[in-house]
Image (cartoon, rainbow, N blue to C red; front, side):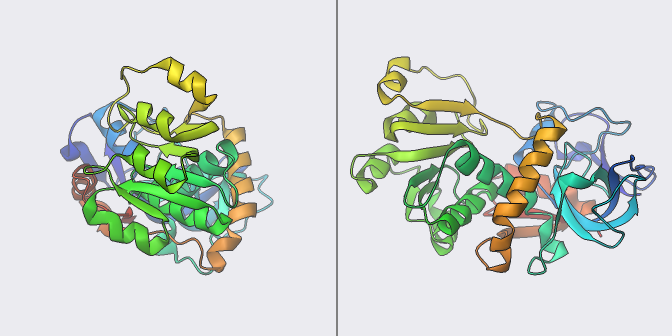
Length: 326
């Protein structure tokens, strides 16, 4: 099969497309999926550079999400059939024509979501929902603040918040405000020209955001604490600006707030299965309603994966960058 293989670490040029990679063999409870589409995530860039190791593999193939059709079944598979359209998250291996995954870690692709777009759905929507709802407690009428509002996670967060009846503020560069506004963000903040904490406190009448989803890190933390409400929650899902920063712990104590660090890749498969199934039950019906739909920035064939990585590294995208594989 064709696949993108990392044989060394470095810039986009180390991404090698090979056509001699053996097809994966599904285990007893796994299905073999012929991948139609995948998509880029920031973790892929970090893995390529050697900062975010993937799972042990004979050939290191990046990629955290996929969509395609089941082409073979393990002997104990009971809930899937050959030909089913499925999508899901994986520890790696999605920049390839085929992947073997546990059947319960797959989700049925709704009819309203084309397979060519579905590869851009699972990672960011599950990440956003897990952070905002499962861990952050976001419900109708509450306020969320999400940084990088025009990113994949950001655009998914806006849609999830509005589907729940919550209110949401996002930060984004000036050129990406229109995307966030079209999706229904209640407040869009230019992080380069405005103090996001002041804007959030103003919008919430001085109360602050109930939950903050932050992919930036660095010096955002003090301002996150300043504009989170009493007893609120800050969910850290990335550190694009770096981790170390001077911080007054006392400010966190006065807010009685919680800061939680989280990733999906490092979790045990049992937990990923539980999250996937819970998300599918609660949120996939919203796709048919039109409330959830991946925002596609651009598409690249698998052979142009290096150009796709360059596009993301330049922060040029608003929404997801799709890899067309099938």
